[in-house]
Length: 268
Ligand SMILES: [Zn+2]
Image (cartoon, rainbow, N blue to C red; front, side, top):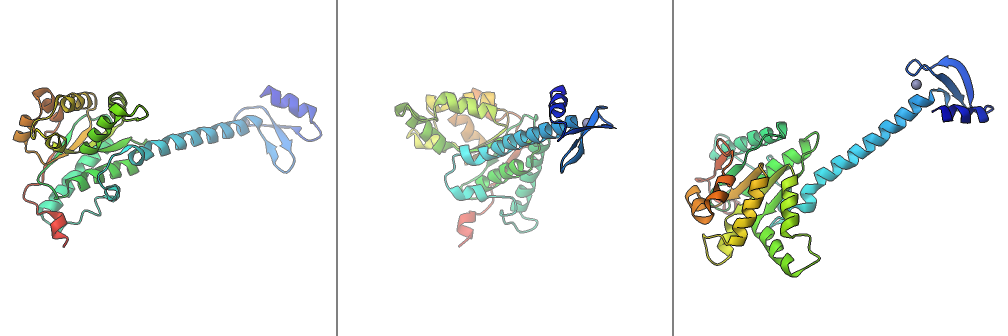
């Protein structure tokens, strides 16, 4: 800043050093045309803070955009799923599940370091995917500092991974996916089990699927799974190492949707 004073000296007809002192920096204030008396050090701090604030905002915006940029959904309408759009009647099983999902969202939101998985299990069409996305949206919108959230439909994920074998330009390599999912703050793995049903040998995941699921569940400790599989089917589908990692921290974090009518049929 001494540079500024020498500069001000060179332009002493424009910038006049005054006898007043900045109460913070105890340096002479400068009289500038149209601006009045300013402390160059205070002005520099204001600029530095504005720059820091801008960088922080860009970082936060980017973190929040992860959900839209990197997720794989079956249906883009899934992005709009919130707790409010999960319509329930009072004192029903649905109302109870929505409340449980809200509480779990609150735990992930308030404790970014809390490591536990959540399982939403039950038959197709009962709103598991809806509530899983609702949890992500609530955290993505409300976390300060932001938490990077991502939603992965498991069939789409494995299709991308397989397609990357023959496409050297694809981002969706095993290495990239595993590193990315390790580094985000919260992951939804949607429809766990359907990837194995698709592989032909139903109810028996291939080695490829097992290895990738192991790597993901081993390095990421905050995963919300939705699945049509019961716990018994889960044990039959995956090897014990994968199962034990899927179940980590799920005590008190399992939402059972059995007994709910198919919401897609109900809508007609
Ligand atoms: Zn000052």
